[in-house]
Amino acid sequence: MANKGPAYGMSRDVQSKIEKKYDDELEDRLVEWIVAQCGSSVGRPDRGRLGFQVWLKNGIVLSQLVNSLYP
Image 1 (cartoon, one colour):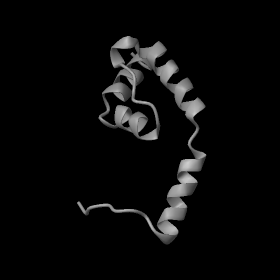
Image 2 (cartoon, rainbow, N blue to C red; image 1 turned 90 degrees about the horizontal axis):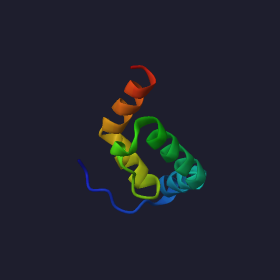
Image 3 (cartoon, one colour; image 1 turned 180 degrees about the vertical axis):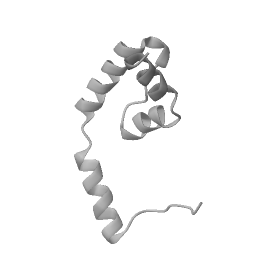
């Protein structure tokens, strides 16, 4: 995989728009709902977009969430 450096030009503009749309309050609400649904065993993500993405990325939390909704 290529090394990612700083974004310039259009890439920077797109990244900036993505970051502006991210809602920290919605993240908090989603984390609370997932923990309430699955239990405290799923843990909690690090604060921020990257921490939330990493928390969901490996699939363990998502699998437990789906299993809790459709046993």
